[in-house]
Amino acid sequence: MKEVLLGGRRIKLDPSRLIGTGGEADVYDIGSGLALKLYKAPDHPDYRGLPDEQRGAKERLAACADKLREFPASLPPRVVAPMETAMDKAGRAAGYSMRLVPDAEPLHRWAEPGFRRAVPPAVVGPLFLDLHATVARLHEAGVVIGDFNDLNVLVAAGLAHLIDADSFQFGRHPCRTYTERFVDPLTCDCRDLRPVRPHDSASDWYAFETLLFQSLLLVHPYGGVLPGDQGRPSERALARITVLDPRVRYPRPAVPWRALPDELLHRFHATFVRDERSPFPHGLLESLRWTRCPSCGAFHARLSCPACAGLAPGGQVVAGAGRSPFAGDGLAAAVRQVVTVHGRVKAQRLLLTAGEVVAVGPEGWLVYEAGEFRREDGSVAFRGPMRPQTRYFLSGNRTVAAGRREAFAFADGRSWWERDGALWREGALGDERVGEVLAGQTSFWVGPQFGFGFYRAGGITVAFVFDGVRRGLADGVALPPLRGRVIDADCAFGDGRAWLILHLEAGGRFTRRCVVIRRDGSVAAAADSPPWLEAVQGACAAGPYLFVPTDRGIVRVEESLARWTEFPETEPFVDASSRLAAGPGGLIVANRREVVKLSLTQEVSP
Image (cartoon, rainbow, N blue to C red; front, side, top):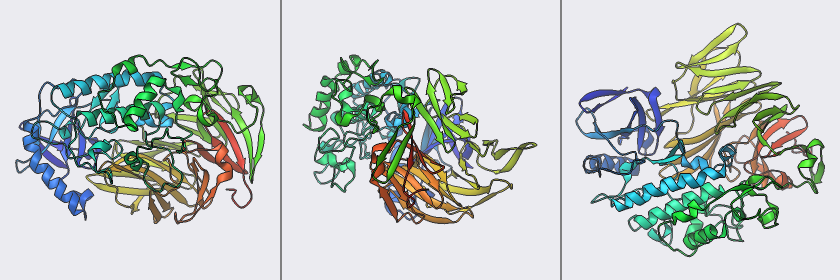
C-alpha cells in the first residue's frame, strides 16, 4: 500500500479507495470530503516500455512542486483547486489534495445517447451557463484552462466542476497537454492536430463551444462519416468539414441539428467553419427553450417542430424519436405487428411506443413510460423515475434494476454482486461466496456458462473467469495492458467465449478495444479500434459470433476479430445506439422507441 505525507501526517492510499485513473495520475478518496491526486512515477507499470511517457512523468514530477506552490488563489468556486502538496518518502512533491466532488459524472456522458435517455435537453442550457461563468472568471484572473475537455468537467447536482486544475496555464507555467478532440485547430500546425502555439482564452472558448455542441446534439462538431475519408473524424477539423456539411453522413442517434434555433446554428458555423473566435454569448444559452412536440413527441428549441414541418434531414425525428422504415405507420400502430422485407432481411416490428425502450433480451423487453417500467406483456415491473446509468436485467419474468455504481450482474434467474472485497452469488440455500476481488474496483459480467471480470490496482490489471456453479476465481487471464482510464466497458457471452468491449482514454486519445476470452481464461484475440466497433454497448453474441450494431447495419464478427461480414440490408433498422439480443429465429433490435425482430437468411442467422 502506497504512502504519502500530507500536512505532516502519513496517508496510506488504499487501492480499494481509488476513484479515478488517467494517463498522468491516480486519484484516491482519502476521507473527510477530500481526494488525493498522485502523479504516476516513471517506473509506473503504465509506462513500461514507453520511454517518452517515462520522460514526461519525470519532467512532470520535477515541475509540479513550483507550480503547486505558485497556484493562484481565490479562483471560482467550481474549480477543484489543489489544497496541500503531498510528498513522497524522499520529501519530493508527488501530488496534492483537493475537495471531492461526490455523485458526479464526467461531462462526456452528456454526449452519449444512452445516458441522455434519462436526461432531458432542458438541463444543458443551465449547466453550460454555470460553466460559462467559471470560464469567464478564470480568464479575468489571468488563468487559461488549456487542456479543456469533457473528462475534466464533472457534473454534480446540475453544476459543472473543473478538475485537473494542476494543468491550468498561468504566470510562467504553460499548459503542455491537450486533447485532440477539443484542441483549437488555430493553435495547431496545418498538417495535424498538434499544438504549435500556446493555449489562450480563445482556445478555451473554442473548447467550450465544442463541449456545448456535442452536449446538445450528441455528436462532435467533426463527427459523422465523410464517405471516402479514411482518417479520424477529428482530423476533419483541419479542413473545417463539420458534421453539418451536406457531404457528411449525419449519425442517426444524434439529435438532428434542425432542432436548434438559427441563431445558435449560425454561431456554430462561424466558429467551426469560418474560424471566428470570441467569448461565447451567454444570451444564446439564456434564450434556449426546449419544447416537446404534441404531435410527434420530439424535443426542439425552435418556434415550431422541424420534424413535423418536414425540415429534419433524412426524415429523422428530433431527439431520436425514430426514423421508421415501416411505411405509413405511427404510434397508433403500436398494437399491431408490421412486417417489411428488405433484401435478405425480414423485419417484424414487435413494439412501437411513445415511451423509452430501456432493456431488451431474448425473452422480451422493458419499456419506461409515464413513471412505469413495463415488460413485453404489459405487466408493471416497478414504478419510479428513469435514472441515468441504471442497468436493467431481464431473465424470464424477473426484472432487476441496479444502480450505476453497483458491481452487480443477473443471469439465469440469479443475482451476483461484489461486497466487502468478495464476489457473491444468490444460491438455493442463501448467499454463496465465490472468491476474493478488490472492493469497490471490480467490474464483472455473467453469461450462461461462465463469468468474467477484472480490477485494476497500482497500474496492474487482474482479470479472471469463474464458473456459474463452482466456487473460486481463475485470475490468470492475460488481458492486453490497460493504460490510462477505462471510460466504459461491456461484455457479451456466446458459446464458450466472452467478448469484452472497452472504451479507453490515454493522452487525450480514445480507443475502443475488443478482447475475446475463452471459458478456460485464455485470450483468443484482441483488436484496437476495429472499423466495425462504433459503440461499447449494444452488441450481442450467439454461437461463435459477435453481432455488432453500426450506423451501416449489423456486422457479424468472427473470433479472430480479423474477419467480419457486413449486412447492409439491416441498415434501415439499426444504428450504433441500438441494442441487440439473440432471440429464437433471429436478432432482436431495440431502438429508442421501437423493438424489431430481424430474420436473416440461414447463412447469417445466429
